[in-house]
Image (cartoon, rainbow, N blue to C red; front, side, top):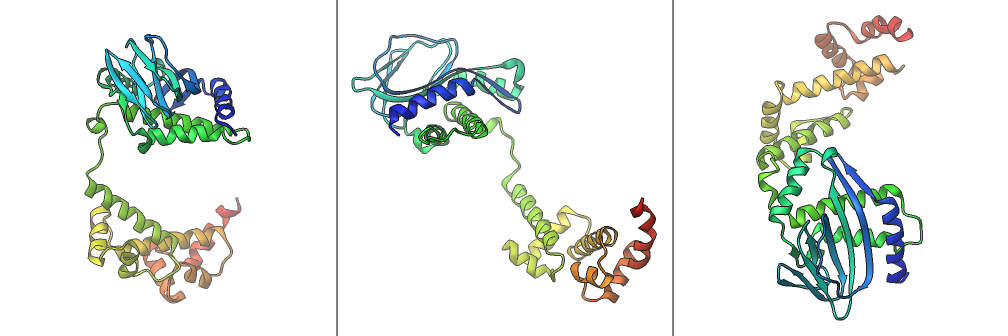
Length: 299
């Protein structure tokens, strides 16, 4: 499909289907989308809204406050509300652009503040934006219309929302003071512990030694021991026993497997060992536990 035909489809579909974009705590009113194969000079003008543009191909100038910014393939530029600006090109720019406003009545404080900071501190022109998410999302959105198939609404919605958020990130001030992350070490420890639990839960029928689980996570057994000490009141061994007993209790109530099969499925080496641990933990044998729950199961 030619770029003219692709851009024509993009104009038709986006301006019909993507007139309002909403994500949690953010609502954007889209005033128009534009996909223009050859954009030449326009008059000096201003908007009461944001207009974000991306150079798909070609060269030219963006002029703002008397400053001339060169435009080339992969450049992103953002016109802010109330700012006089102009685009010039002798050869024609292949441009994609979107005009939008923040619906503050339907948006949360985080995004309202973020767009207000954008007005005060935005970088108007970013060269090499095709190396950043914003450029990738522009190219992704454009590529959707190269296909003759009718694009899925969800694909359009989430591609465009991702694009709008990436524009905010690209042109806005450094968000380091806005986002509050856990320290890297704490985050990594939490992730390792979560992965350890997932591995244990998915492999309760197998032999689960400290070394086996530590090797799966590519950490030392001592490190794994410390993870359980920091995140639970149980040791590694006691945690696994607890999970095996929980699974066994569920299987005793929800199915007709024999106690021997349940013991095997829950990773116990023998029925005798299973019965001893189960009775020790719950104060009743597996067989009696199952029988005591029968009336409740039938009802």
